[in-house]
Image (cartoon, rainbow, N blue to C red):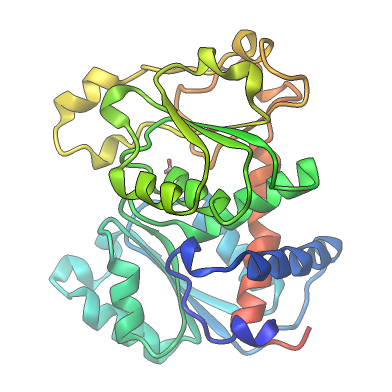
Length: 310
Ligand code: NCD
């Protein structure tokens, strides 16, 4: 199984088989036991973090993961920070990083940017988010979190609530659960932010039972997992369209009390106003532990891709 990860590009969660993800989760369990120690599995390696778009958790957790493994990190954040602002194109930036590093993590506002980088670079590329399309490592973290909380990903009823149209984390999460056997998936969003047809088509092809809804209240009592995301303001072609849907859904403690006692709320973060603060301190909130798992998941992935001896 290890060899399947070696020097592999990670562009979409859909490139993975269930068994590969399960293997990744096994390795992640091992790393969890050593999370407070500095390891030397990637001594001498250089990881490039190319973040053309803002990020907090994803960039920091890749950096922490790399450093805990003994690798060095070179990074930039934001196009202003480098020669892009002088007009350098993506191709040249990637070629340069390909020369300087052993693996490149890239985030970009354009769909397909990571795939394009993978075509140019000889070194492996990890997609840390491309436009509204994919965010595969976030989906790995989300699935791992569910496995840790419920013992299994199969057989659960999922509600995904939010910006299903422009959100890459929520799209990758839906793709991720489609590799397993969920009992049912409720796709909940305001009309204007409905899930894209290509995602529905994939669910149909994989025989996943799903239903679209406008209100979370209608289904809250059936859910095991409620995955929430913010409205992706920056991806709206027209700011007026954003104003129309702004604040159109909100998860409160009162709402969750109508759900199962074991219900867990996930969120890739950052959250804006879609989750009430009262939820943060409740037993429903799983998003802080989810964020914490970002480090061991990324440690496993880096180790496997770079072929370190485990
Ligand atoms: C997400 C992203 O950038 O797509 N954040 C993250 O990586 N945890 C979600 C978001 O920005 O809403």
